Image 1: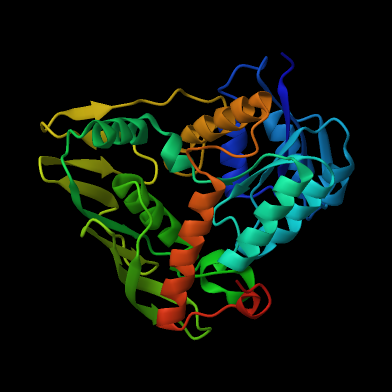
Image 2: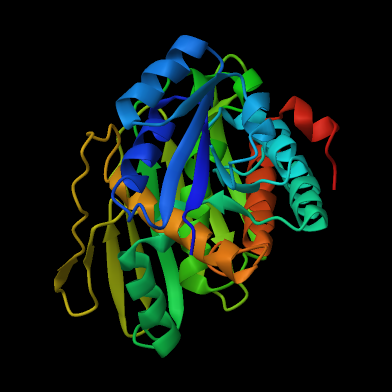
Length: 337
């Protein structure tokens, strides 16, 4: 089989880490052949650092590059829809950073378009492809934890200085930047979508949320308590409790360790990369890259691990939280369900 030929859109931090992660996979399976950035010099430096043969100013040249099979999109949130649609229109498969889009209406429009184009499209919720998440799912499906009763998850770092988080024009706010992780792990544990959401939050001067607390109610009577913050560092763990015991995911959005139901610490170390990553455990992005390759080879348009329905359900919860706390975005008036 020929390798999957990747292009990377945007030369920022997460794109750097994705390139590092892909470099740990076999070259016979994955090759990064192009990168595009808003500035040509940034693209050139990125390509030089990661050994990428072609670099472009802007993103349209990637869409026109016939030697690109799949595109990883690491732009700011507000650009996800437009750039993803451009790549799908050009016949590329898409792995787009979370949140897939800034609201459910936009996400539905994009996923419908991807299906119409017969191209694979997945929200890059990398967490779910870690071995820790696979272990948790195996335990819950097997019934080792009993009936899931609660999930307690907190995710916070001082991020108020980060433009993508604090600015409305970039699709900012902790609901979209951090909340997606807390929502998805709750759904992963309960194996269901919440039936009701109750939320409260704090907004900055732009009307962007800098922290929220929310309760997700599930049909089995269970609840997930979630908390995000761009002001404080939080424990950043997810505790899944059932009638027979609990599991704790440490650094839950990228966990290489968990505390199992019997108290055992299970570790899943990551391989080293030639170029150092910037963010915690980012070599784990390799798992979602490999899932993308496998699904494309199989002719699938989505992954069962982060399905289109999963992305729409997460977006629905995000929309509900933002509406309750008053964190509206311009797209909410354009892309409506």
